[in-house]
Length: 442
Image 1 (cartoon, rainbow, N blue to C red):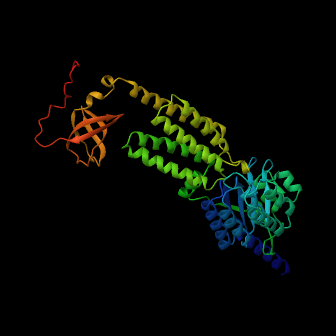
Image 2 (image 1 turned 60 degrees about the vertical axis):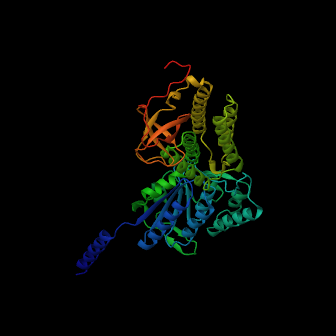
Image 3 (image 1 turned 180 degrees about the vertical axis):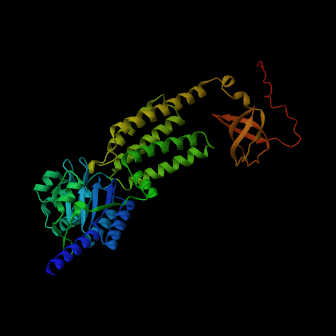
């Protein structure tokens, strides 16, 4: 009977073990700028893990920093979590800079991959210099508090802010900033299995077999991911200039609603991105100056003098646009490409405008269209729009709005834009031919 009982107990234990599911780890990612989009996603993910009773949250970090308000939203969610949050700076080459250092230090487990770094957390203002002493003192106190919460090196953590210190993963481990240096997430989870960790509230949690855990990935929603990816230092720089070019096209040749609208949208996205990135006022001022120089060159050509000044300001503005904290800067490849594209665009455009202005009036392309009659196309003139004259479509403007189908007469040509006036009813059209001009063979 005793043998039967022992066998039954063993079978019951095996059955219970077989029905026990492996632990679940929710995997989150902080890649790129720390902005409201990623902060909201991480906070929501931590809440989900607490609701589901997951064994842990694995937060993989590679960030140059970002908004302090978004950083605080993330650190508060981590500190208040009953589920341990394991932060991992990886893969090799990743960084937890600026706001990322605060987030790493707020986690019960701070791990890094070889070849990564952490630090450079000095608050920087728009001028590129250090923020006021009050802001620096507050930032220092915050990062000290996070380090002390888990018994880490508060002095080194404070130096991230006061001295812009940045250290490697190996140094972070030896200086008691990081708890572990692991080459991969798998080795990190395997090494943590069976160990205990103390949360911010003082409660100790013992991990189970994390190496056998089920990893549940949670990524940003598609639209949110696109918005988050827009806040990239290189994209912001590109959008600024692409938007500017399209806006210039709209200013020079009115009526291109597409170019004006898209240009304005891209320009506004760039301005919004600047709000999330560590920009310097001098860089923005140089970019604005470059835009002014180039636009003035288009309006009043100086045979390249203002174009050269504009491109010089463009290069200087790109180099000085970001303060460099956390490695945020405009890529030299991107800067060179944008400079060449912008320079080519403006040199080509200006040369064409100079050519038109230097031609004799009798030989100017399209001048013969003055005096011809045509018709307003769909959409009308309000008072700008498109007309058909001499079997060609032209951008046109009129003193007053005209409905589509209205007959018009060309009174002037400015660049590629016609000035037209309505043809009175009953007017005897000359068939769209220009009037003969005295002294010219026609």
